[in-house]
Image (cartoon, rainbow, N blue to C red; front, side, top):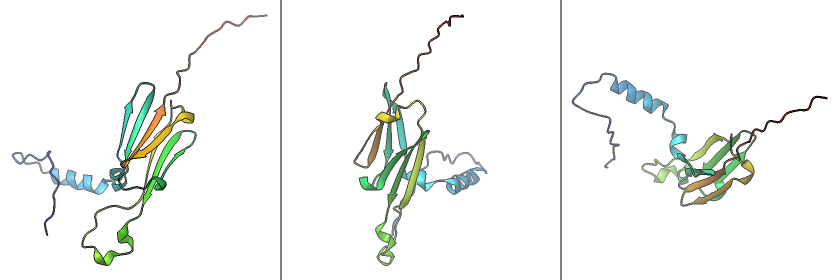
Length: 142
């Protein structure tokens, strides 16, 4: 059976680095599969921020976006067909379980957030709060 290996462009074979193996071991040990399953892009669109989260293979019903006073939390849960039928699979690499990411809502107008899910991408439009204009006034002394 053939297998695929990941190409790592940081390797240069002409220089010996005794710490390379230790660095790779540390990266592999602390690698988070949960974060790998929910990668996000956030971009500034002028009056709002656009957050796009990759959630391939999730059903819309299994994705929840929750707001509290200071954060927005995306929670998604996926079940695998291999949970019940392990005998027929030779190899199973697709992940299942629950995945969660939280983001600060500082500077966001949380009452007008819009969400959509299409082609495995959750898109949130996060409108910016109107900047507070500080006004000063002189008080009359009586």
